[in-house]
Length: 518
View 1 (cartoon, one colour):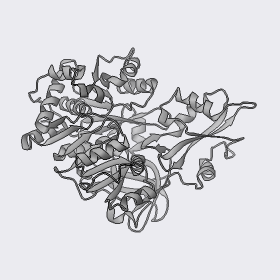
View 2 (tube, one colour):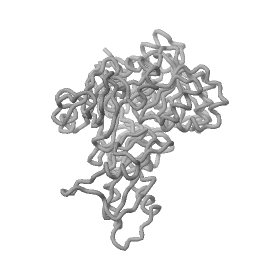
View 3 (cartoon, one colour):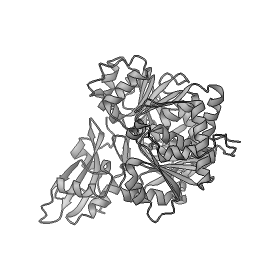
View 4 (spheres, one colour):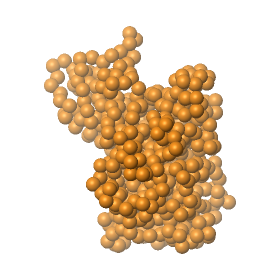
């Protein structure tokens, strides 16, 4: 019996075969649930013919497209595991993810062919297939991807896929500088779909969304796109986030629900088209990835929008909590209350619950919490000790149970919805011959949420400039991880034992000790 997410489209193809499942927002092409079921069955058969088996890892290095979703569903129907890869990573970073996950087949946008072939050199990846970019899809010309789909049988597959089977491995930056693969099961994604119904005024099969957040992130994939496939709704997929295009597509497709990360909402607020477009069909907007600036919230609230925020992590599929519309003004600054089937609490270093108003680490448990880190049993045991997932976020709860985050144990920086762990950037900066000491922190930014800021001690007599250092780092890391600001200092604040005092640096450069700001 197939109890996986691949069965969702099979069920919808039976119940509402002519309903629109996916729309290619760049070309206008539409696919019904019947179409989607047939195409993903054919793609699954074609991948099986190429050697993909149950439990094998199938990588996707691609821009947003309906084809991205088709790969995801086809792999699920086979019982294979999808590994979405952040296309903003450098070739070396892509290679690490592919090697760590043991990817045997890679489907990639033609835009990233050079990176795909370079990253898979000498790796046991037996299948590389190009997915056409929007520009190529618009021409209607044959593509390797369509050839692959056409080679398979559209007859439904019969595979035993259980809810506890791994559906996807999503890589998130690690505190040691190497990313870790969070294993999400089919059951995790099912419960995420159920929890998504709690967003705003709820979801139904009549809802439509525009997916512009990247699908390689759990937010773009898991907040609305997959839940609407579960419910029978419609997702309009845009290749990338372009504010004006997003607004126009929301209007033309009569979007009823929307999810974007905070930095994207801020960009929409600054779009010249936001007040000219007819967005009257929109029932609610949801934000996540980082706290939304209050100025952005106020911008949309003044226009009568029902705006809600959520908090989550890759490891929680991702939704942990929702700050609903009715509580947004009174509890602004908090991450809301936990979704129905998730429990949370704040604990001290000995995992004892802290009193109301005191700071503790946020720990959670529920059916949407991941199965662990791929190939990392020690890290998994530590993260899930005592049956609770330790988020690494510090917060305090008020008398009503609303939690406000105040710091991050891991000092993570969230910039434009991307998670950046300072230690990874610091390790690269330390390799520069003119860098003697360095600390990386996040500084609040109206557009990006936070910007990566490097506080650097140069070696004696060095004339290194900020521009030179940033350029050097960009050759070695994904651009979103690179510092946007460099501050040169004579020394960094440290304890007598040499421990870096990042709270003091945050106080100097942001005006507050707290790592999470609005």
